[in-house]
Image (cartoon, rainbow, N blue to C red):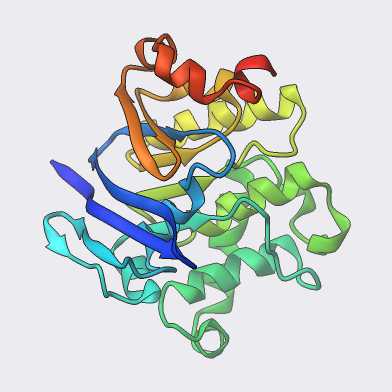
Length: 250
């Protein structure tokens, strides 16, 4: 079943097309990689799909339903979850409290209000279970501003999982991690997908994304350049040309 689709999505800023006439589809249960050189429009496309941005033209569909104008918190209730390229924790909250806040955010557009109504013990138990699942429950009671980036990346994933998503959109989750951390996190993404979560992964780490994704979409200059099986896509000359001076020579 097709879970998510974008139909001829376009958006321009100051006359410059960041995304132009892009169509894509992600089937339920897939792990799809979205790649492209810097400035290709990958993050902008994610923002169109999640409702952070409204397209100038085109539609976003979820299970065939047009959700193009649906607000972000309503999409979360449908099963959307997004992790950002730059981790944005509540820095003066503990990791556990950050995860509890995310769960409340799935209930309402005003998570602070929801926190006053949720079962604190149940929310704490849920947060601890998620932090344990991601291997960072040892830091549950540490303030977010006092833990390293690798922990924050996993905490951000726990916040997304607190929404009990059907669809997880990850914006460069491996950025800033060393090689060992990146491999561990990529393996975690595979585990989450195997557990039933459909994943659309934006990533610059070509080694890891081609290792774990079942299918790749390649953006270049705001347009869809290629899609297909990872090895076949990366062997294409036009894809290699798009990366000249960037990942192809990294």
